Structure formats: C-alpha cells, structure tokens
Length: 461
Image (cartoon, rainbow, N blue to C red; front, side, top):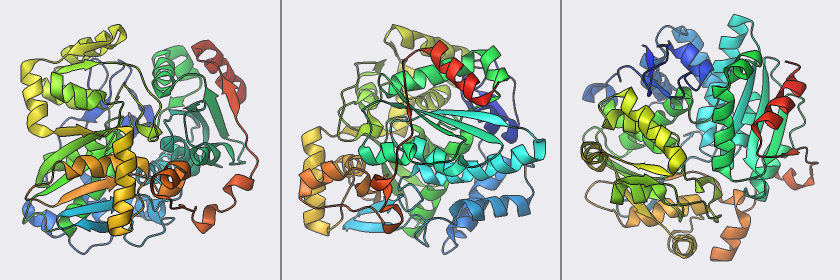
C-alpha cells in the first residue's frame, strides 16, 4: 500500500512514513494510491464481532506490512482499552428510522479519541523501533487538542504542542488541554481563530528547515491515520442496522471534513451507504459550497458549537482530489486560490460532489431548539455539535436508516446545554476534579517566527 499527495509533487510513501510525515512536502495531504474493497460477505461477517476485531479487519489492508498481525492487534487493543462502553461506539434510537452513534465514550469524551488513541499507540511502536524522537504540533478547535494530549502525554519519544484559539473553546475543552502536568505537554492559547491556528501549523510544515530541525510530526486530521481510524465506526454501526443487506445513511456534523471523509472512504471500500449528509453550523462554508459550487471564505462567527467554527476545511482537499480525477496540479492551483478568498469548482467536479454528498445547516436558534426537543422526546441530552447533526438529519430522513454521529459528550458544553433544555450535563466521575486542577498554558501571538522560536526553545532543537 502506497500513499500519494493530493498535490502530486511529493514522494510516494508507505503507511508508516505517511503517518509520521503528516503533511506532504508539497503542502498536500496523503491519500492511499488505491482504496481496498470488502465484499458483501466480508462486511456481513463483521456482525457481532467486538469493535477491536472489526477495526483490525477494516484497517489491516491500509497498514500493509508496517506491523505484524500480532503487533497491530495489540496496538488496537491498547488504543480502546480506556473507553467506558463495551461497544465503544453504541447506537441509540432517536426515532422510527433515526439513530444516534455515540462517539464520546473515550478518555476525553469526544470522537477524536477513536483516532488519537490509536495514533498514539502507532507512533509509540514506530518511534521505539526507529529510536527517534519527534515534535508533534497540532491545531484544535476544541477536541483534537485534548485527545492528542491524552494520547501522547508522558511519552519519552514525543513533545506535544497544541495551538488553540484563545477564548474560543469551552471551559471544559480548555481545561482538558491545560491541566495535564506531564512535562512533554505544551498548551498554547493563540490569538485569532481556528483557521489562524491551522494556517500557522501548515506554515511550520512548509518551513522545511524548521520542520527537519525539530522533527515535526502532525496529528491533525491532515494525518491519514486519523481518517483511517474513523472509518471503522461507519462499518460497526451500519452492520448493526443490517448492512450489507440494506443501505444505511449517515449525517455528520463537521467543520474540517475529516469525519465525513472517513465515511466516503467506507463507501469506497464497499459499505452500502445511501446518503452522506454534511451538517454545518452557522459557519456553513461546506453547505454553501455544495449549493453554489464556489468555496468562498466568509469569516468565522463564534458559536455554541465551536469545534465547527471553521472556514478552511483541510480534508475537503482530499475529496477534491478525487472530484478532479486525481489531478494534483488542479488541486494545488485551487488551494493556492484560497489566499485570495476562495475558488470556483468546475462543473464536473461539482457533479461528483453532489452525487456523493448532501448537505444542510443549523442556525444557533435551531441548534438550541434541537437540544430542547431531543431531550423532551427521548431523554437524550445532545451536545451542540450533535444537535446540529440531528437537526440536519431530520431534514434528510428517507427510506434507509439514518445514523447521526454524536461527536462529543454534552458535559463538554454545559452552559449551552443548560440554556437549551434546563438540564445539567455533569462530567463523568473520572473527570469530576477537572475544575479543581491548576491550569498551565502559554498565550502566544499569531506569529510564525515567535511560535517556532518557542518550540525550538522548549525542545532544545
């Protein structure tokens, strides 16, 4: 299995190198050269298996010979041992044909744990084998940062720096990043919004002298291993509702496009997916793109679903690569146009996207109303991101069962939940002392030179 860049001008890599490299040296994102498929019989055989066994069968072809079967099975077992639900990703029924996929039973109460716990174990084995130490820098709109810190804290082979937009994450999200005491963890509150954090991260990867000096590695959703881990729960949930014998639909609240791109990969692998619905909040660039055919930035308005407050959706580049027939030069040109505010997508590429995805948006008022309505009807307390998904899903219900991805525990957004339905969403007992712990973070300017100097100083490189 080889991995190629979406911009067509970087070396092809094997799984391990693609994982440790993160962003390709031409600025593109790595994708598999070919996507392996599973037969209907293979998919049917997943029914009733433990989550870990499904994960092994779905991901194994992408890993190739990087790890032995025994090593990979052990990595998966360790990755999900800390989850608080035996099913790992349980389904809850919301209505006659609508189901919620709870993805918040991991250590940091967000779907990012599925990928980050796995990638932490993958890095640990690969770096131990190589005898290397790397510097992980990540940008987060809320959940990726805490999941990365939880996965990598205390590891000798890794220093972790997480950029988050100062004042634009919830108190719980911030404290999950700023209260760990391990010396290899560095929480950086950066001036600006998430797109600014993501832009500085990409700038660091494109500064090759700095990148090589600190041995920079990335664990944002730009990292292919992150996407791969998320493919698994599409299979477990679809099979639970009758796949491959019937089609299943998914609605995915998304800002950076990584989680729904994982669904797209599952469909390419052979999972019979009917609709893949993009759900956006008021920062609706993905929905607007699907409606207008133009990817045009319009600024970020802070919302009660801050993890979706994004205008530059990194993983959208991966699906554009397929939409343009895997023409890396066209993708590179389109990405260059982002610096001028956006780009127009060709008619053929838009036809591909509209055949593959549906989309919708939920306003702040609609999101709050959905939290209230869902609680009154079902007793299910939704986080604001999951509520965006449920609202959009309700507008797209059809003949096939609809699965909405619940991306975070409501306790991560207590103020919004309380305002919407009058219901407290307490933290699980293992996090009960979160607000009693001391915070440790550094306020940083939106300045590449200053960020690089700080990272060099703390890593001694």
